[in-house]
Image (cartoon, rainbow, N blue to C red; front, side, top):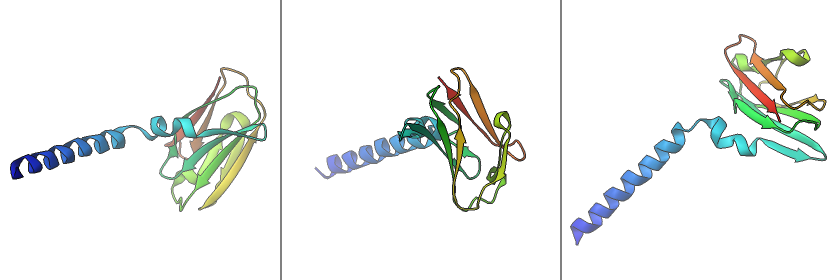
Length: 129
């Protein structure tokens, strides 16, 4: 009886550990993609976190809808706090901690908007469909 209980516990730990490792190895852009775009008062909000890069790195948004890119920083001291979006002429140093909203007019289907850090090391993209 003791052997069976120990075997069940070991199997549970192995299976649980495998599930946790698989979730950690899934890119954050895949895990969070469904929750990064929301619609509030007729505007879609694309939420991005800037710290050690941008997360998620790839977003899909609806074309033809006014859009807000909402960038959140939290003790962000790296170059991802210096955000550039070349296609709209945006360049700004984000606050170390806080929320910055960037308003966009409706984008055409097929448009891809790319954001970069000041050094070009980190980036994100929003694909409008």
